[in-house]
Length: 478
Ligand SMILES: Cc1cc2c(cc1C)N(C[C@H](O)[C@H](O)[C@H](O)COP(=O)(O)OP(=O)(O)OC[C@H]1O[C@@H](n3cnc4c(N)ncnc43)[C@H](O)[C@@H]1O)c1[nH]c(=O)[nH]c(=O)c1N2
Ligand SMILES: CCCCC(=O)C(=O)O
Ligand SMILES: [Mn+2]
Image 1 (cartoon, rainbow, N blue to C red):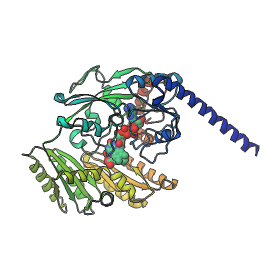
Image 2 (image 1 turned 90 degrees about the vertical axis):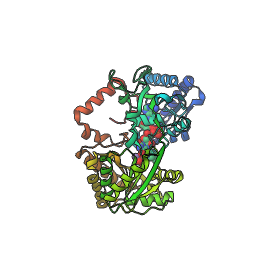
Image 3 (image 1 turned 90 degrees about the horizontal axis):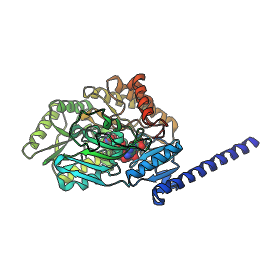
Image 4 (image 1 turned 120 degrees about the horizontal axis):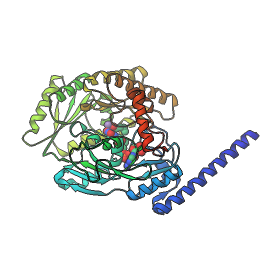
């Protein structure tokens, strides 16, 4: 009895101590960035404790809404002086637990840094603050005839997209964030500010110094806080044509993809949905597609060549026994199709109300795609799991959205094992454990298999050099 009582007292004491220190932290931060930019309410901390995944949330002690690079620099400098963790937060749409705060600390929300700083239409580039979302940027530049085509399904922040090296349905044509970031402004762990590609750099190519830009693309907030990004823009095509092609079997759809890629056709989108995913999209997005392994395709070109592109794709799909090949030229029909594709994650989860999705994200050389998708499906069947499959197959990248009961730890463990087995199969065939979602907390254990000890030690040496006190998003990636 006494032991229980003293444990309770100790718990209460620790709670009071943490509460007092987080209050002191908030008071100091308010003096740096102003009262309106600091939140300590449970609701705001809860909202910033998790992303869109099944990974358990952890609340930060304080949430700070930065308004400028100067704010970020001052906050990081202060946190360094107190050895307080800093966790950057864009829009919280990540899926590997990257924004959770397992050690508490300050969640640095960048959504109020939402200014488009410059558009250089003649150079096809722009510079934005980190909190600008991809949709906001595309709305802002609509009249220039340009677009920023990297499209994770969610309306993510461009800072978050840089930090996770995001991609999406159009990477097959326009590249991922790695190919589209020209320069970054980054606040380092001591509060100093750098530009990764030169103080004013926005040239199309450079061989000057180390490639700092791509060190900070994909670092998930563990090496620095991205405050501004200079990005490549692309012309909005004169003509766009979409198509839907259901196939008799999975192999036909995947082999047609490989053949289309090998033909050199500049396909803009080529997305695979297995029969379960099509069924889920039909229900969730009110489509009426045949329930079969299906490709959604899109071609970007000029009025004079768009039909020829579509025709080559149609002939190729027919030679792999597609059941039909239906073009969608109408703007609204196309928008409906891609909206449904972007909502696939929610469609999958809606198959079982109350369930949560567990997303896998492997990427392999395209010649290995058919084999590994078959492996993924066979394993689902063996383990009796429901997992609709969707993929940016032109890049050899696909996701199994395994549906889990979040209250059933045994099922979560089983799905975790499935995800690990799939990732190891991807490595066996020379792929990667994540094509676009990153490592976060979810895939840390797999890094050693992908890079080996010497590779991991190199990453640790970089982390140690840039963040010796481990205050930047501790517990993530490495
Ligand atoms: C429905 C749906 C569909 C998709 C996706 C999500 C959802 C919900 N995603 C995943 C997600 O949208 C993607 O990872 C985004 O890049 C995350 O951007 P946020 O702004 O939400 O970052 P979020 O706030 O979730 O943070 C992600 C990570 O980056 C760090 N971070 C955020 N801002 C930072 C900054 N300014 N500086 C440094 N670090 C920072 C965070 O600390 C965290 O580790 C995705 N992804 C994809 O690649 N392809 C896809 O097809 C999809 N599709
Ligand atoms: C939120 C899970 C990832 C979604 C995704 O990457 C996709 O639909 O392609
Ligand atoms: Mn994806």
